[in-house]
Picture 1 (cartoon, rainbow, N blue to C red):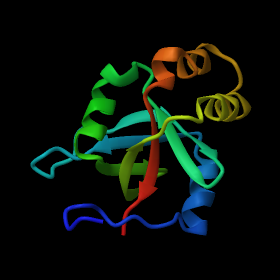
Picture 2 (picture 1 turned 180 degrees about the vertical axis):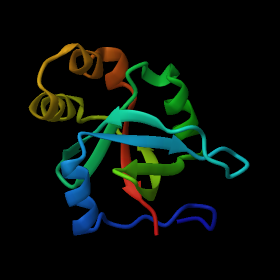
Picture 3 (picture 1 turned 180 degrees about the horizontal axis):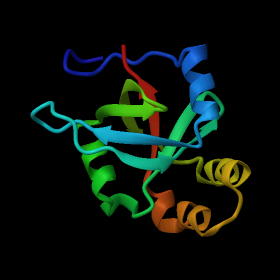
Length: 129
């Protein structure tokens, strides 16, 4: 890892439990000046050991662009804020779709989350040290 790169860590059991209970989380990317962008409420799923989120508006979504610009930010899970890295995640779109359907069903929101536009805007959320 380069000196500027954030140090990643594994999710704790308590964090995983909190994420499992929270149907929605709030995400915010860090700006270049180290301040947080506004939080946005979104769905999330776990695939294997990874937490994943998607932008309903694809790669052009405001929060998505902010999250990938620096690759860092925070999530708020039921009032607990966790510093995270946002890492592009490609190649498991079908797995993520299945996880989204299993967690949220098949309403219009899930159909948007599994659209081609959203599928290209999948991010893995990894906690920071």
